[in-house]
Structure formats: structure tokens, C-alpha cells
Amino acid sequence: MWRSLASNALTFLVVAVFVLAGVMLWAQNEYAAKGPLTQAICVEVPRGTTMYKVSKTLEAQGAVSNGSIFRLGADYTNKSQALKAGSYLVAPGASMSEITDVITRGGASTCGTEVVFRIGVTRTSVQVREINPASGRYEEKASFNPAEGEAPEVYKAVLDRSDTRYRIALAEGVTSWQITNALKSIDILEGEPEQPAEGALAPDSYEFVPGDSRESILTRMKEAQELILARAWENRADGLPYATPEEALIMASIVEKETGGDGERGLVASVFVNRLDKGMRLQTDPTVIYGITKGEGTLGRGLRQSELRKATPFNTYVIPALPPTPIANPGRASIEAALNPESTDFIFFVAKTLDPRDGHNFAVTLDEHNRNVAAYRALERANQ
Image 1: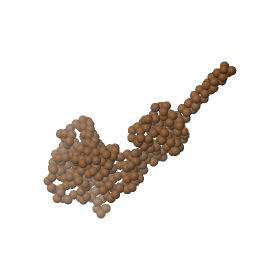
Image 2: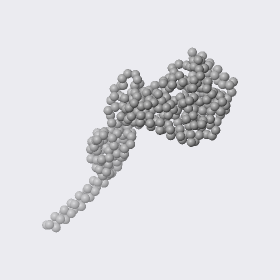
Image 3: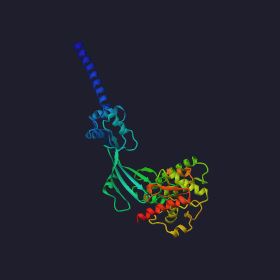
Image 4: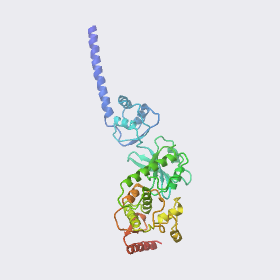
């Protein structure tokens, strides 16, 4: 009898082991198998949450077929305690294993809401954007000027969300005064910053978190510009009329204000380099304008003849050299153009049409330039 019982117990144990092994193999296959999602979703992982709560969220969103297997798989791979707060894009058909990797890998959120503070030459705006999981692209939810009235409710609402990302985007050609004042208007930053020198800040995109100091963001911008200028100076063309990197930065700022066309920066730089080489005045309006405004906003009108004749350090119709400082913060492309200009004989240029996006006509001789100017004036008269 005892022998029979032992035999039955052994048989049961063997069967149980095989069953358990089968269950484990099935669970492993389920954990690695293609998931049920038919379209992408955003999954939010709040700060301080648990894998149990996240698994319930994923079940409710239809991203996993079995929350228990999801948790067991995370435990087995030692990832249960590795959750990273944020909002993450989960692709269609993502397996439980892939989802676990997404929510424990860390790094910037790949989904959710982004608030972009855009600092431009003529205005500053705040844009609230949200990723559409289906397309993977941002869609605008609100846009407003922080200097004009109260912020919309959608902006106020996203400030309290853990998955909201924040970014400052600087346009090429903005001045240090414009940047400093725009940072002061961002109410989720702290501190009273000093205005950096003109040209010292790199136009680019900078992520930050609420509570960051304005000074720390300006420091990042300065360090980025220093690196760009140093590398461009190291790789500069031979025979340029600049004694220092600072003079090249001044030229880059003039190029930046004269053209926004990527294909023209090198040509515009060549004109100014050729004029300096020939001892000619640069004769560029943006320097005169900067001498009037000091970079504190836009002029808002045309230049007067008296202003073009007045001797000032920034009036390049009068002084036979570069102005004493940059007139804006130039981007990488303009810095590189100033230090590696196109090889041309051009010493004149004028806009092709009334639309700045159409670029310029370049000329070697004054006669050719005068014909280009006459064509431009004719367009002006036709549109009056």
C-alpha cells in the first residue's frame, strides 16, 4: 500500500513538474509574443507608482492581455523596481517584454505634452503641443503671446502633469536683450539674470524643468556658442580679414540679419569679406538699425537719410570697418559662412523681390547692381 502511495505521489509530482514547466513556457511565450494593440497609445508612468498599478493601466488600455504575466515577466527580468516616470509611446503590436523595456529604460518621455517657449525676432510665443499616438506627431493645442493677457486654461492644466516637457527655442538673429526679457516672462523659471553680451548665445532648442534658474539656461546657451565659434574658427578658411574669433562673430551676426536663406549665407559673407579686403564700407542697414535700437526690439519703420549719414560706431555707411560688437546672436550656419565664405567677386547685393524668402541678386559691378536696384524699386512702386 505504502509502495502504491509513493508511486502515485511520484507520478503526481512528475506530472505537476511537467505542468508547471508547460505553464512557465506558455507564460514566457506570452510575455514575448506580439501584443494586442492595433494602434499606438501613450502610457503615463506617474512618479512613485508601482508595477502593479502600471499593469492595470496597460490592461485597461488594451496594451497587455494579462497583467499577471506582465508583472511576473518584469519580476523575472529584475525590472519591477526600475520604473521611470514619464509618458511613453507604445507601438502597435508591442510585446509585454518590449513594453517593460520602454517604461524602465529611462531617458526623455517619448509621448505626452510639450510646452515650447519660442523666442523670435519679432515676437515671443508659447505653444502647447501634444503627441498624437496614431501618427507619432505633435499637434498644437494652444498658442499665445505671454505678454498679451492671461494664459489659456489648457496651458495651466498641463503645468501640473508629470509627463509635460518644457523647451525654449531660440530663432537665429534674436538679440541678447530679447532673450533675457523673454526668459523673465517664463513664470516657471527662477532668478534674475544678467543680460549676456551680444552674440554670445547660441540659437537652438533647450530643454528645462520648472524651477530651473534663468541664469543656468543662459549659461548653457553661452557654452554652446563658445563651442560652435571655437570649432568654426579652428576650421576657418585662409586669408580672412578677421584678427580674432570675436570679429568673425560680428561678421556672422551681420550675415544672419541680412539673409535667412541657407543657400545664400556663404554668398552674403563673400560680399562683405570682399568689401573689407578692398577697403570698402560694408553699407548694411541692420548695423545702423542696431545702433538705434541697441537690440531692444525692432525699429518698426524704415531708416531715415539722416540716420544713414550720422556717424555712429554701428553706421557701416560711414565707418570703414566692422562695428564694435555683434548686432544679434548668429546661428551655427552664419558663423560657419563667415569663416568659410563662398569664393566670389561679388561686392553688391539687393533683394530680388519684396518677399525676403526669394533671396537676393548679386553683382560684381556698380552698373549691374544699379540695374538690380532699379528692378527692385519698380516692384516697390507696383505694390504701392
